[in-house]
Length: 166
Image (cartoon, rainbow, N blue to C red; front, top):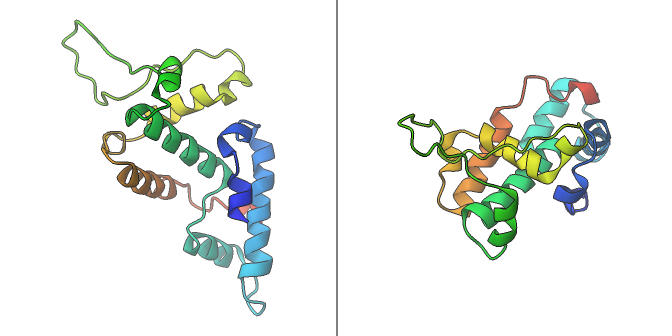
């Protein structure tokens, strides 16, 4: 089920947020009907507990994770697709100044005028990458980056984040 929902997520993930909620509703129904025992009444607390035990991400979180993993693999790690990513992204630098930058790996955020263009891959990646803490941006291996990114996404969720789906 999760592989079907994740298929080409960076591509179709640029749809608007309210449409992404349909995928989250499917996952919540899956937890309610299939994964919870029939004798458990699905209260908000039990659903959140079961969802977190599965270590699942919401559709928006999964999209952002997938985009950042692709960016890290092909831009930061200098893999074969680096030439494509170099056309889309550029690190923010402050040459000729003595001003220190807190996170040296932040990207230049492209200027987008419409909300539609703010759903683009390059804008979302630049925004999400710049929001990451420096200790995640500075990872040197792909598995370490993925682990730390997943932990960051899960721990930065607001309380009762699933209540809107119940």
